Image 1 (cartoon, protein in one colour):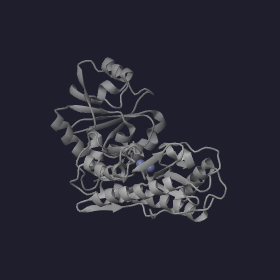
Image 2 (cartoon, helix red, strand yellow):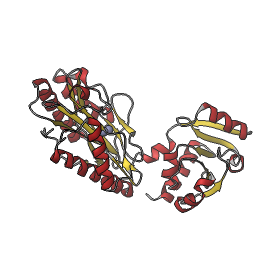
Image 3 (cartoon, rainbow, N blue to C red):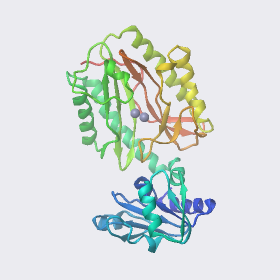
Image 4 (cartoon, rainbow, N blue to C red):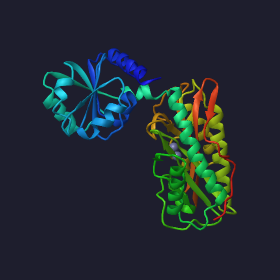
Length: 356
Ligand code: ZN
Ligand code: ZN
């Protein structure tokens, strides 16, 4: 789906919602709808028109990047031009992205406009990826895979968690990544029991598990992959945790296809971990969508959720965290298809032992 097609669908969404316009303030949503990459912008969309307000720092780049929208240069807070471009009537604001202070500033400037809180209107379009987006996510995944494969080959070579995280990011950038898609996690031994551990300046220990969670950003699109590596002979509790986590991860991958509810996919993995008596050690959801944002819809967990559709991109990442001992998480990134899923992350998930 090209940017003009996204804009046409946005117009249909506004009509369906009975809105005369939408003030888009989330920069990722603005990028999705126009191609604009910058740190300051407000996009005003009506069923038939689009105007991007940005400041003079982006005058040249916005005109080069933006498709299907007029670009107007405004003062730094973008408020001076707002009244001239927002239509009268019912106009949505993105309730999840607008501070109370900013909402009040909009209201001050837009007397006579009914500001309507909305949620997820653009995100609803973003949840199913088009072929161009899928190809960028595939490329981002290939970059991260190559860096992680290099780490598996070379081992940790006495490096600390923090040095290893930086090394992975350095390799990804060499291979063409814009950046890491999030702060890389490298967490050895008991530290791996923290699902979102921050790498420390501590050497990676022998005879334990190391959780490595990483991804690349390429042309705006993210990838996400976790492998948990052994650094020698494992204590039985970690060996068992790895085997159970892998079985759960494979069961969820096998169950992943269009038409399945996100809750049921989460259950496919959670049931196996619970059956092994480790249910209380798997506290987070099974996975999340990935696209322009590293974490976006659909959410694969017990609460809420939705039915998977062809073209969604999701992670499948059960984890088992044993406080004081260690942790395991195994994460693949996959495109949902009509009859299954296309797994993008290619590194093997069988327990791999690497040198320290
Ligand atoms: Zn991850
Ligand atoms: Zn993830």
